[in-house]
Amino acid sequence: MFLQTILLIFLGILYASYSQDCVRLVSKEDAWDKKLHSDKMANYRFRQPPRNQSCVPVKVHFQLKTFAFDEYADRFTAKMWTRMIWRDERLAWSPQEYGGVSKMVVLATDIWTPSLKLLNSVDPDYFNMDMEECLVHNNGEVMCVPEQIYESFCITKLRNWPFDVQNCTLQFGDGDRLSTTRFRFKGRAITLDAAEYGNGWNIMQKEFKEDSDSDVQLSFTLTMERQASGLVAVLIGPCVILSILTTASILMNVNDYIRLGLSCFSLISHFVFVFFIDEFLPKHSGDTPVILFFVRDSIILTITSVLFTFVLSKIVKRETVPFEWVSLVSNKVFFSFGKYLILPRWRVEPDSKDNNVNNKEIWTNMANILNSVYLVVVIIVYIILFRSYMPKEPPAEY
Image 1: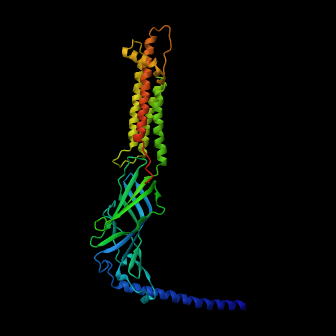
Image 2: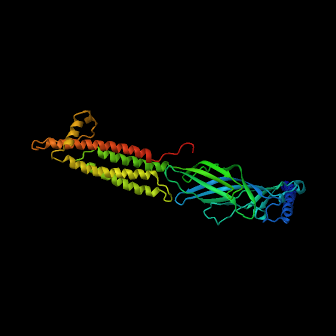
Image 3: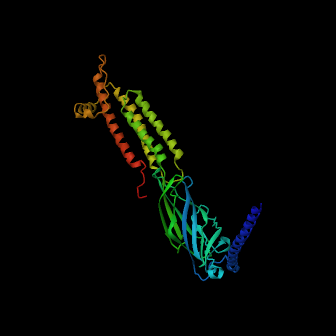
């Protein structure tokens, strides 16, 4: 019991000694800091810019945290840290006069701060630079780093959708017409860090420029590429399948209703695919995606195939004496090397009771020739359509 009492007394004395030193140290530093604030804020007029300066140079650096591009509303939203640095001689002091204090934190509402405004904002009448605290160095240099959300219009370009590339620009200027602030970029202007990817887009390139003599003093443009892997799978694949369906129907026998059924199925699938694209396609754009031109021309080819099937079915059923030019073309092709180029080849089944077998054979040969020519034309047209209207991945330099 005696030892425990001695130990408690010793700890009490030790605690009292060290705690008083800490209190005196903290209190002394707080006192100098309070005195510094009191002296600097005594006659400070926060509505007036720094004195003895025709203009106030302000260095600005943006650090992108997150971004989003709404192609349905043509809006680009960026959440960024906006670091602004300027010099205010009214806030300078000598550290020796204030116990070695070389920095102090002040409320942004207590000092003059530059009015950096997004000029191409969605809401041009709204302006609020939400700053809480700023760091002031003893040489009068002030640094404020507010977290801001900037939202601007960005016109969507969908010509190469879904491999589209969008360029969104943010333009900044002085929001206070009474001040003479001159903004300049600091360093690389904008830092992306891990924000290059987000919300279905990749930032591939950034450009910035500054002009302190114009209303738009600072501006930077972000080049974004859509993350199109999923859309490519559900758009390009069906285009290939539809073209194969239309081409495959031409290879079938014209007397078989399967050919007509496959052509009609392909035509219906085209229209279903158009409604499917409408679910994904952004509506606010002056550009027409080239993939829609491909679907349009493919629909025309499929309709032509359906009508051509009816025409060929009438030709192969004819029993009248063929025209002279029909016989000439038929014999010229089928009694030469050209017969190996005819694909497919339909034959007339021999019938001893039918006296018009020869005529029907000539008409059938003519239908084979026309069908083969049409098949080649369709294949060539689809090759042209794929080369002209199929969306292409952006070049690597983006």
